[in-house]
Image (cartoon, rainbow, N blue to C red; front, side):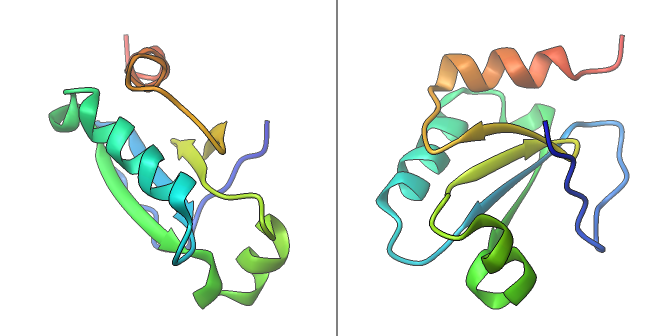
Length: 95
């Protein structure tokens, strides 16, 4: 799995979730809906990054969006469900 940390990564005790998106991406919208439908929004910090605003991210991901990372680890590409998201998030909580 790839590890991606943006320069402005926020250090916190909660897992940090980043979704890499681009405008007009229906899969990106569906992924965001599933993330918040998981009902655990108080257990993580969230950031959305439009890859079209950064040429290196646009080259890295191309049309391969959405990409969801948890603590810098690519956890999902293209599709996810609320149940899968919650499980992956909780697997990354400190013991």
